[in-house]
Length: 200
Image 1 (cartoon, rainbow, N blue to C red):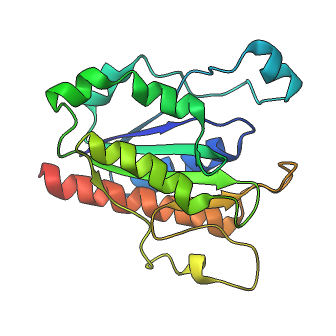
Image 2 (cartoon, rainbow, N blue to C red; image 1 turned 90 degrees about the vertical axis):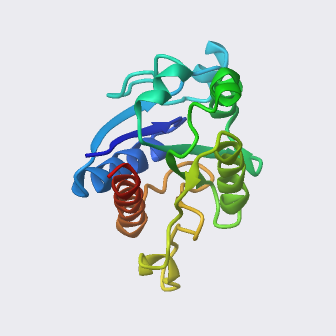
Image 3 (spheres, rainbow, N blue to C red; image 1 turned 90 degrees about the horizontal axis):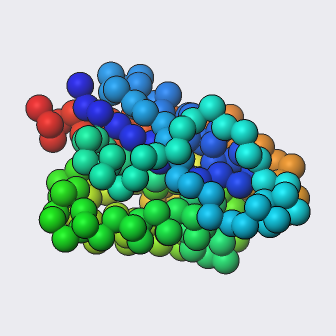
């Protein structure tokens, strides 16, 4: 049974919902799953002024060394101008020791994100996460077209071959749709399945 970590940062709860769906999919494939979040790095005044969601059922990760305990790491962060949010980037910036020792080589990983609009940088944000993960030697699993929901054009849908996504709306009022959450579950399951094969 592979051990899977869903590691996320969420300002308004959209990525938190996606993280829970990713974890659900991984558990459905028989994995042991933890959900953790990275620390908030924005000043408290900014957090309050922007009305960030500050209550979460998931603990803050203890630090980069905690990543060594997992067979798969699935990373979720919202976009900030076409790249991953600085809170997630800051966490990986502290993980140089893991990079230097190759501690994460061969583990499985994936990425998921949220943007305000359909063209607000979903794919570039996924690439920014994936680029970091590749530097740490992780094996990437995306969201293949077995999740056919990402090809639907009858409504706004998230999803890209590079990872599960959702569209939050400029004011954050749009919540992840059933198709978006299905994509997250699908990707979580696929990553857990690949991790199980590699750890068998």
